Length: 273
Length: 336
Image 1 (cartoon, chains in turn brown, purple):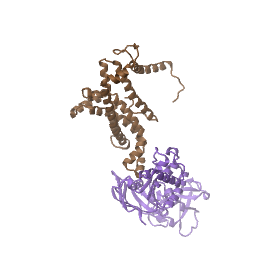
Image 2: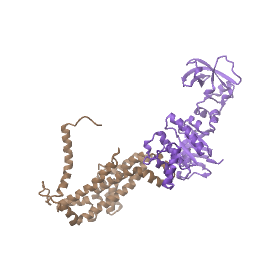
Image 3: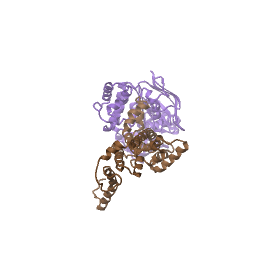
Image 4: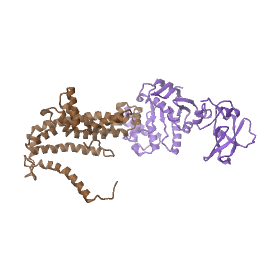
């Protein structure tokens, strides 16, 4: 693995260029949260201020509703994903039946499908079922890809638990619930935590599926959608950047934690969405 | 004496496969019982039926007089040592051993003390704070044993208990298991495909083939008097004599078994003691095995192996050889 070769200068430059291209815009978002100019993004900013932090906190009550909704949706979608993703992983890692591979693929599909397809499909399905668009339709939409993330993390761990370990626990007097609590949960716990945090991060900043599954009106606006709206009609633009920094923190920290939790030789399923 | 385990016409089918096919069996309390057979013969399924991991398709199972079918594994006073040991990797050795006690709600101090006792019994005192991953195969096996025994089961089930150990360790564990069983007086039931293991450890052996018990009895009984060609061949590779051959050499016109070690070499015109018989054949292979040499002779269409002390040997492949055996050593069998 450890090569003595050093990369050539052009390759090094290309790599640095690529990284800068990816990360300079992020820096700009942070930078413009502190600019004194509120209508346009001029570079360099004419002056610096921390005023927008207090504006966002005290003078913009319209932030709180989307923020609350995003947290609520992410938490519920993650909870649903933890239950169903774990059950699916337990079932599919243990059982052998005809069509098992296809079923596994179907489980992973929602994360591979473009969000716009998932969005349209869910929207028409909700229409046919006559389900009114609400917080719950957003939650269902998010749960489709959150389940995949939890499933991917849990299934790798389940494969390492031998069937005889479960039998040994039952043999020693534990019923199904006790076996889950004392033998299975401790072994899949960190994978579930990692999967759950990734799921939360994915749900928290999701735009496309949300657009299709949310109703209209202020009450169905999640934080990312609110931000999109803010960019379209410029007013106190740096406030959006302050919120963006907050979103970065909320999604970035769980992903870093998930990375370290599953670092021992496993891939972090779905981290790429 | 009460039966520890009793099978009455028990069958377990998986689809069209009859893994266990109409087995009736009584295992007395305190017995060291071996289930011996090739893989797929139904012996492991029988063990799993006793443990409760499988339920019979038909028939009746009793454990100490209590009906067992329908009872889940956690409601049976039976514990298992698994072939792969199935230790819990996230727990220490001490926690592994104390698991059954914890589930039963025994207080921490009490269960830790009992776990240490159990570890002492298997000569692993001082190991309670280690992780299973830090132990050797033999040590893991002992932990699995302690984890089962700490619950004071009335029946201990062992699934190929020595299969994963190397030869020397296997012999040592055989002796230790035997001593442990004598000391505790618990009924031990173990599954193996190794006839040497079964014969040396068990008081009684049941030989399985294709889901049925083909013969059961004391090790010496099964070894000396196999009832079928399958048993004769599987237990200690006895020679199987055809009915014609047997009849020509002083036996009945039935299939018979003849142990290789009952045969000695003879001179062509030697006067044999009364009750002995001899045959002549062509040596097809000679293999040196240390204390003995194994000679395979083809005689009158029968392929006969003989184990002779190495020092007696002056023969080689292609020679014509006369060999002799006491008539009583050729044991008549059913045709099967």
